[in-house]
Every structure is written in structure tokens, then in C-alpha cells.
Image (cartoon, rainbow, N blue to C red; front, side):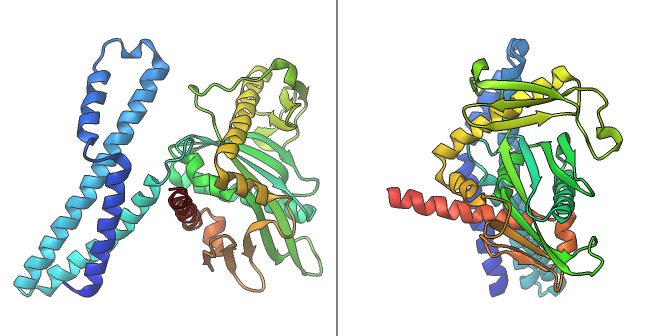
Length: 374
């Protein structure tokens, strides 16, 4: 076996070791038997919420086992093919097996990163807020570009995207928008996007065709699971209704149905303006509880807390990522130094590389912290 292929095999084996550790592979079959026994309980669906939670946990374990065993089987099969091809001096068989192993490496690396999403709320759905910052019309337009970017990313992941509220810019774009993005690990992936995003380009709104710098902030926080109780004192909140104003089309409301909830002790403000007033009140309250839950996560997770504190105002000195469209094409994350010249791809939602780099960095930092604590 060629040295390059040996190195690739070694990397896949390391990924397999991590996958096995994350799900505790030795006990996984026993735990799956227990799940199957509970699923067969005729009284399971007497409590639909617990039943759905059980079914989700079982499916996650099934997926983890199948992923691990599939990668391991494919690796062993292709190693045997290489050995057979070398014995029979069949270069075509060897080459095909080596190409398959290269593809398997990418799959294993992706699954390894997904396995690292083991934070308390990483598996949850998420809320994503975008607010335009310094730069006027330019920043409002940039905020709408970011909104499109994240919607495209979510759609590629197969996630469900719901627009919760939106405020149009005076001339173009949006001043702010809030989304609920639903899907497994939605929060785990998107949490690394919290921060200020900087755009440099030739402004389409400048007749002199000068370069402009714009800023918009992104804030991501998890949707609270139904089994996590967050108490909100009614005396601590103020609920207002108002007539919403959107960018047009299906998101325009013609009645005073939008709801704004202000949590007085923390100053947190959440809004919803897409459905009936009763539904908006429910949506906004869930968003408030999620924001309060995020604060608790921040207090218990120094890494996440530091990231939010570093976010700061949407302006100079606080950006986590720069998107440069002129005079050259480059998107660069300032935390990980991960970069690409494929600006079009990034703005079309190709964000996995940036998210993976940040996730790997955070995991490495967490591991060092735990080692120092030991």
C-alpha cells in the first residue's frame, strides 16, 4: 500500500475511534436493545412528548451505529481490494480502491465533526437574528444578503426555515430579521456564526462607484426543549402589539397583530409578526425563554460566553469574518484564519468549511481547558 494511502487510512481510523468513543460503542448494542423494548411498550404514546423524545434518542443511536459500521466496513473492504489488486498486479483495482478511500476520508471527517456537537443544546433547533449595523443603506442591503446566505445554507442542510419577524430598510434591504431554523444540530452548527460580519465592495448605491465597508451582526441562540423549564415572572415582562412593516409580499401584515415582549430585568426584546396575535404571543414567549436559556448557557460555558462578549457593536474592531468582493475576492474568518476565494459560493450558503473550522477550534480549546483542569 502506498504511503499516501496508508496516511489516509490512519486518519479514517482516528475518526472511527472518536465516533466509537462519542457513542460508547461497546455499550451501544445493549442500549439499543433497551430502546427497542421501551418502544414496544403499548403505553408509550400515553405521553406523546416523552415518546417523541425517546424515538429521537433511539434514532440518533441507530444513526451513530450505522455510520460507524458503514465507514468501518467500507474501509476494510477497500483495504482488501488494494491488497488483492497488488497481489494480482491489477493497477485499475488498486486505483479505484484508493479513490474510494479518499472519498471515505471526507465522509469520516464530516461525521467526526458532527459527533463533536455534544453541547447541552447543540442538537436543538435555533433562532437566528440579523441586524444591520454601521453603514446605513449599505448595511441594510448587507443584512439582507446575510439573511439569504443563511436561508440557502439551511435549505441545503434540509432544515426548515420560518421567518419570525422582519423590518425593512428605508431604501433597500432589511434593518433586522429573525428566523427559526429547525433540524438536528441546527444550533450546534450555527452557534459559531454569532458575531459581526464585515462586507467590503463597490457600492451599487454610490454613483461614484467607490468602495464601501458595511457591518451587520448575527446572533444565534437555541430553541428551548419542552422538557427544559424556564420560568418567566409575568411582572417582569411588558407585552406590546403593533402594526408590522415588512419588505412586501407574503410577509406584510395589515392588522395590529405583531407582538413585542420586553423582559424588563435583562432588557431582552423579542418580536413576532408573521401569524395571528395569539400565535405571535406564543412564538415570542418561546423566543424569550430561549434567550434566557442562552444566558444561562453563557454563564456555564466560558467559550460561548467569550464569543458573545467579543461580538460587541456591529462596527469596526468587532468582526469575526470579512467578506471582500473588491478589489479582490476573499472571505476570511478572523478566529480560525479559514479563508476562501469562492465568495459567490459562500454567499450562496457554502458555510460548512467555516463552521467546521470554528467547531474544531472550540473543541481543541475545550480539550486543553479540561486537561489543565485535571
